[in-house]
Image (cartoon, rainbow, N blue to C red; front, side, top):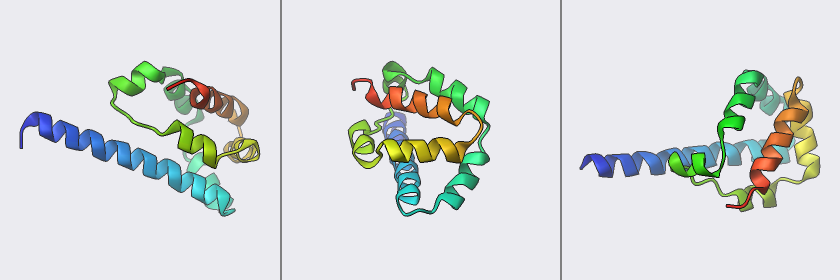
Length: 108
């Protein structure tokens, strides 16, 4: 396989893995498995997470060739879910959720 072929395959796998992680987190939230989700969220460095979210915009997603289906995520998550996520995150949860909402509501 050529380097370009390898790169495209890696991009596709990265996209699939990211979408799978997002879907798994949504599934945990919807099924009420908040304890497990809270453990995963609390392992994250909140400041680093906010920095990463701040770096992401539509151009960055395109540059990284990440194809996140925002419409699908918006169909799966409602305001109650976002409030639950904020509470599960704890410290700086409101700030993180606000940034996620803005990112999801930006046009694709």
